[in-house]
Image 1 (cartoon, rainbow, N blue to C red):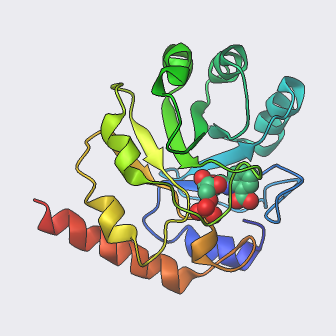
Image 2 (cartoon, rainbow, N blue to C red; image 1 turned 90 degrees about the vertical axis):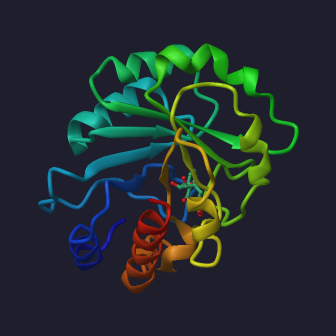
Image 3 (cartoon, rainbow, N blue to C red; image 1 turned 60 degrees about the horizontal axis):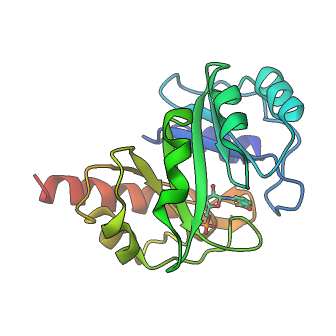
Length: 202
Ligand SMILES: O=C(O)c1ccccc1N[C@@H]1O[C@H](COP(=O)(O)O)[C@@H](O)[C@H]1O
């Protein structure tokens, strides 16, 4: 997110996180967060891909990040070190049919949440879904976010995924007018779908 008006519109909506991508190879790259007031209920989140620890630490301080999403091949030790700074630590993993859940074992104590995205060389933001049936074999209690190609077309299906460990959906490239510019109309529609699914699943 990098356009002040777009951010101001987004933070009026009932969302829990706002993401800023500090990965230079991403078309959504930002070097800094736009300094706007955001409600306390929304966590200012930095997304990093294989950044070094000094860069991540400095960015947390400079940009007042409350959550960090590590989307590359970051080590357990780095996750622990960043989490120990007092930010919420979300560790993303690219999932495909061959993904081995036991890769996550070592990370369990070092992260707050996992995030499962489609495996890709770009590390994220591909707009592609992975085979969600894979999640049926996820063996740990650690809660996770689902991401990767979520769209208005598949959101209801994702929301109905019957797993109490699934605690959030990360809406990214399918909810944009252009890279980094969120389509607020689409986000509103998404929130209505989610609200409808919540009511119908009670
Ligand atoms: O959005 C990006 O450009 C990006 C680049 C590198 C790593 C992560 C990135 N974004 C995250 O990717 C997932 C999936 O996004 P999409 O729905 O498939 O577009 C999501 O968690 C974004 O936060």
